[in-house]
Length: 193
Image (cartoon, rainbow, N blue to C red):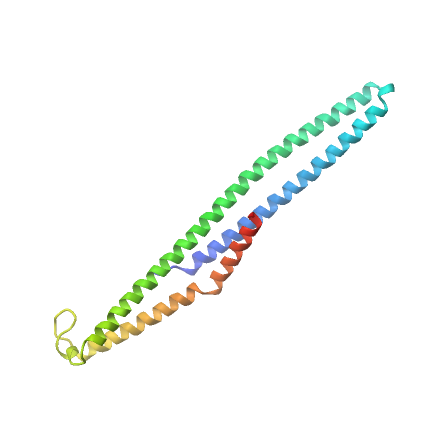
């Protein structure tokens, strides 16, 4: 069973999408924090003006302070809601990224197991060919039946075929897609840090 490279490409695409979402959410958070800073600054200015005008305080000034305090309270509530939403989304993205990493590692392990099984089969075939004399292929096969020289050629072909399959699987494992995914995972981990 071979692991398709399309699933690795899907993993890469999923991670890229998750990283874009994370950047977007961080941008939203930054904008909201800037708005809160602006509102806090306005509140400080208003409080300063109120102190200056306390001697001649009027209803309008009191209403303005209350309006700004209410606006600040609303902004802080909005900030908390946005932070909660962002934290939930970031946690969700991290879970998805972790799932993608675990799935990718499982696929790599499965491919390594496949390569190991093929290598064991190849080794067994080579040992069988090395252990047997050339004339045994003219007399008795592995299953005890008489076999011809053609069977020896089939075994040699199977050894060659297994060797090529192992090399192909290793080449896929060491492909640029794997390296690119590792880079993206490292970048994602750096951003998470």
